[in-house]
Length: 105
Image (tube, rainbow, N blue to C red; front, side):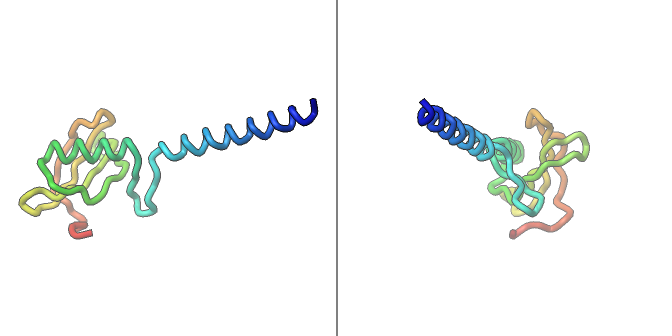
């Protein structure tokens, strides 16, 4: 009986670790440079590319300017770089020229 209790405890602990690890993998993560990654960040990038007709996303990060939740820096077909700010529903709040000169990263 004692062996079953120990085995059940170990199995339960491994299950908890596996579930926690999976949840952490699905969460957005910080890339160390202010950017984020993950499923929500990918959705923000897709929304910014679609809204601007851009060909490339250079960076994505959390934002709070102008009521935005996301800021995605994209390169448009003409080569210009703009910052697309999106709200929590991924609707465009504002598109403005990139002021930090990140192009080419």
